[in-house]
Length: 206
Length: 206
DNA sequence: ATCATTATATGCGATTTGGTATGAAAAGAG
DNA sequence: CTCTTTTCATACCAAATCGCATATAATGAT
Image 1 (cartoon, rainbow over the protein chains, first blue to last red):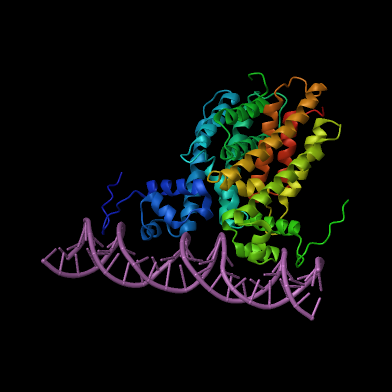
Image 2 (cartoon, rainbow over the protein chains, first blue to last red):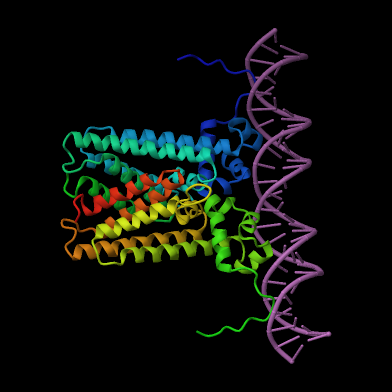
C-alpha cells in the first residue's frame, strides 16, 4: 500500500462514497426527474456547489448511482451463486436476498434501484438505457452460467435451454422489484421466488 | 339508445378519449414527473385551460391514463385467455401479444405504461401505488384462473400451485416490459415468453 | 507569515413549472 | 336579434428548478 500524501488544499469534509449512497437513496424514493437538487442537497448534507464539485451535474450524479447499483448487484449475484451446491439452494438464496433488499426503505419498500427508477428514463435517455441494458444482461449471464453448470453436472434432467431459463429467472427478479414498489409484503415476494425456483429446478428437491 | 340532445354552449372541438390517449403517449415516453403541461398541451393539441377543464390537474390526468391502461390490460388478458384450448396456446398468445405491444413507440419501444411509469411514482404516491397494486393483482387473477382451469382438466400433471405459477407468469410479463424499455428486440421478448410457457406447461406440448 | 490551492457557503438569475384570470368565440334558448 | 351557457385562447403569476458567480475558510508549500 502506498501512503497517499495528503493533497494540497482544504480537505473534504465528507466521504464522496457515503454522499453518493445518500443521493441514491433520494433518487430511489422519488425517481430521477422528481428529485431536485435541493432534495439531493438535503439528503447528502452537501450544498450545491459541493455536489457539483464531487459528481458533476444532476444526470452525472444519477449515472454514478446507477453504475454503483449495477456493480453491487453483479457482485452480489456472483457471490450468492458461487458456492458449489445444488442449483436450488443457490437460486433460493438469490431470491430470498432480493426479497429482503427490495422490502427495505424508510418511506416504504423501494424495490430495485435500477428497475424502480431507470426504467422510466430509459426510453428518452440513451445513457441510462445503456446502463439498464448492461445490468440486465449481466444478471442474465450470472443466472445462465449457474444453470449451465447444473446441467453439465446432470442436475437438471430434461432441460436444455439455459439461456431461456436465465431470462425467466431475471424476469421474475424484475417482477419482484416491481411488486415490492407496489407494496407487496415479504411473504409474497419470497413466494414468488420459491415458485420460479420450483419451476426451474422441478418441484422435487433436485 | 337515447338520442342525447346537444348541450347548451359551445361544442367541444376535440374528443376527450382521443386526447387522453395522446396525453398517455406523452407520459409513456418520459414518465409522469418529466412530462410537463406544455408537453401534454403539445401532444393533445389542447391548451392548458382545456386540459384542466377536461381532466383536472396533471395528476388527475395521469391517474385517468393509468386507469385506462389497467382496464385495457385486464380486458385484453381476459379475451386472450378465454378460448377453450390448451393452456400452452393461451399463454403463448398472451406473451406474443405483449411482446408486440411492448415494442411499439415512435421514440423507441416503451414497454407497458404501468410498469414503465407508475413503478417510479409508486413509493411516494399512495394513489398511484394503489392503481399499480390493483393492476398486478388483476393480472395474477387472470393467470391463476386460467392455470387452475388447466389443472382441473388434468392438463398440468404434477403441478398444484396455481397461484404461485400465476405470480411467476405476471413477473415474467413485468420483466418483458422492463426489458423492452431497455431496448430488447422482439425476438428476445418472444423468447422470454416461450421460455416461461415451457416451464409452466412443460417442454412437451401438453 | 504569506501565498497558492482546494473546499465550502451564500446567494443570484434565467428558465421552466403548475395553475389560473380574463376575455373572445361558438353554440342553443327565447 | 339578444341573452345565456359552455368552450377556447392569450396572457399572466408565484414558486420551483438547475446551474453558477462570488466570497470565505482551511489546508500545504515556501
